[in-house]
Image 1 (cartoon, rainbow, N blue to C red):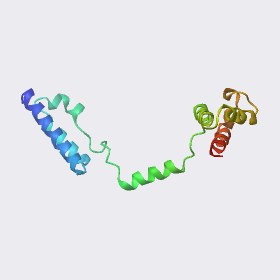
Image 2: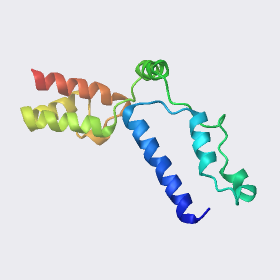
Image 3: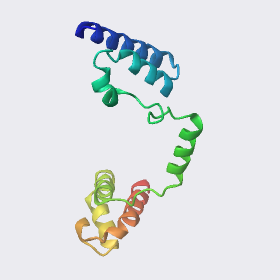
Image 4: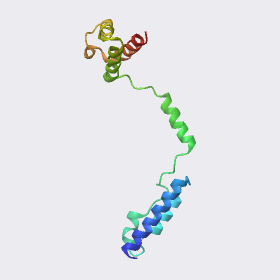
Length: 137
């Protein structure tokens, strides 16, 4: 089998796979293995069969809806990451733009600091809440 014929067979298989994906037809591991076996040239099969042979048991199956729902539920139950310095800074800047610099300085002073880098990172959530409350007031 010539190189051109192998490339053409591979191209054809890829086009079929693209069409299957477009139409939403699920592709199984067995189908992938069959296509890979068909595309393997007969002459070089003895040398490269071990390297190119697709093991159907090792090909990942597409995720089912149940698995996707379980992953979303697990993600929803995870606690969100604590606010970062950037989050706190954005809240103070928004307050400063909305209510003025004096309002932002008053919130910082309420937490016993004159500038945000001096604030303990464990209090970022508190200062964000305070800034949002002041902005809404």
